Length: 290
Image (cartoon, rainbow, N blue to C red; front, side, top):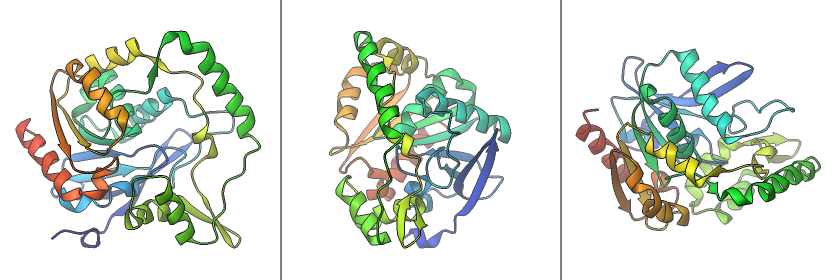
């Protein structure tokens, strides 16, 4: 049976403007590309369990800016949702990729959905892992959201990163706030930690935790989803995020081509059950001629 130890992922780096976008890759350079996009405060290592089960593919899992080994945005910048989409636009510019299959988890799925809507010629198919729709809000909450977001920026300037005396301590901390088991959390933690003196701190940019000063309106979110033309494959866990369950009811009908699969598992189902998830992905690719 395939395991993580059966693959030898390579580090990869793409220069997009002044940012270094790092990631992990397996597969030959002539094989079809599958771009993997992780969720908020995760990193490229979240796709390591899945990689052995997707052979005959050039799998490229990136670290979003501010995550993993990738650069942080400059001090005069922030992590706006639209900027994640622009990161993908720049990535396609520097690589000259024509069109790829995307597999995206959580926040990565939201970004990929917006990218697929705005740049349909770049996305052959989209697999969403416990992710559908966007973090959206009613227009009448705009002022309140703006205030919360800007106040969080002011407070965030003085907040210090948590320190851990060991990798094990960091793993335990990650497990305590997620649905991950220790062996899964360890994959993310090892890529997400850096040593500082005798302690360890998170590599991730602290600004990632700030409240966004704006949200898409529900009408805007629906338009983006209705403009996704490629086949979409949703795989979600029966113990995943509540917003995914709500999103399925609210947004499923907006996609032109959508298949749905519920499996036993939580939000990180691609780490919990990589073999089962990979079978659903490969079946989807086969069904849509990929």
